[in-house]
Image (tube, rainbow, N blue to C red):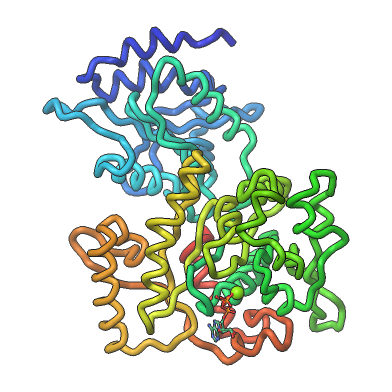
Length: 451
Ligand SMILES: Nc1ncnc2c1ncn2[C@@H]1O[C@H](COP(=O)(O)OP(=O)(O)OP(=O)(O)O)[C@@H](O)[C@H]1O
Ligand SMILES: [Mg+2]
């Protein structure tokens, strides 16, 4: 394939008044060509199946006689293109955090989740000035690159980065379950989410990265033939050997494999923030490297974190695509701590990672009965938090709220005796009680599963 002359291309789309069609023809088409999609593998103005919605481009590699531009089914990557300027001459600014950027992000998410785009795994938004790749996993759409400013001296690197990602799509979504507050249900959520995802035929790996070892103990497991703790420091160890199967005895009296676990090692207690730099070369980036070995095998990798913002929780979030934040409605501490996770801790990791991730998911309430008067008090507290931390926090507390409709629904998992007692029976509660099962299924569908 001839080398793309990006310098010429960028000169052509340089004028500020460049309209969308010019960006499409002069920039996006050569971009798609450079990403490996020829003219027959592209479809402009692709109908997403959601009303009259059309995305500017859908693309997919042809398969034998299935020519995408003709069949127009099963797209792989979508591209939403914006002009550099509106007709009125106002610049369309796709810089991070601008209203136009947030709207474009919402738009690509909506398209990726539309009926005819179920196979689409990637989305790009660009106006020729900015460009960002997003990845879709089930219901989740996450940044897969930074929102980059396109320049002549970085465009080749940006294209190479996008090409590498879309040619080697990871299978797994990596989730940290974290709140900077104890006893909110982090471990309980991790275990039951894993069990319900397994019931939906998903392949799940759990990582107990809390030296408290609650998850490991609750499933009655022991460290495998290699300890993840040792893998942090010793590059010669095979991290695959740290995995142990969780196979409780099923109805027929035989072990049934549910999911895999990397148990916690009691020696993790020895590792403190003071000695971590001396011991672990890449610090909190090391776990991500180790877990990369599993992202092509599992559908979900879920990490149970300790409460404090220490090496283990920092490593977990560094290794994750998304952070799931359990809270309790009664008592404002877990709600305030969630805000710290979203506004302080995740951005800190995002800056260090420099690849667009990780991303917080909206909070949920866990394990308490909520009466209407209590909910009023809680919502007033959330309003205070949003005022203090900024309006950008709103979608993380009230994800269903829109400018015209302040819907304050927050997903809630009630308190169940079966859940509270499950640690003693060493079996996830969702396997013991159908009401609990239904509730966690609703939870998995709300956050992760598509369809
Ligand atoms: N939905 C629920 N119904 C009943 N009990 C629950 C529920 N969720 C959690 N619990 C109970 O609340 C307690 C705390 O839960 P869990 O250990 O999962 O929290 P955690 O955030 O992991 O705590 P830690 O900060 O110690 O790691 C446990 O005894 C657990 O059984
Ligand atoms: Mg815990």
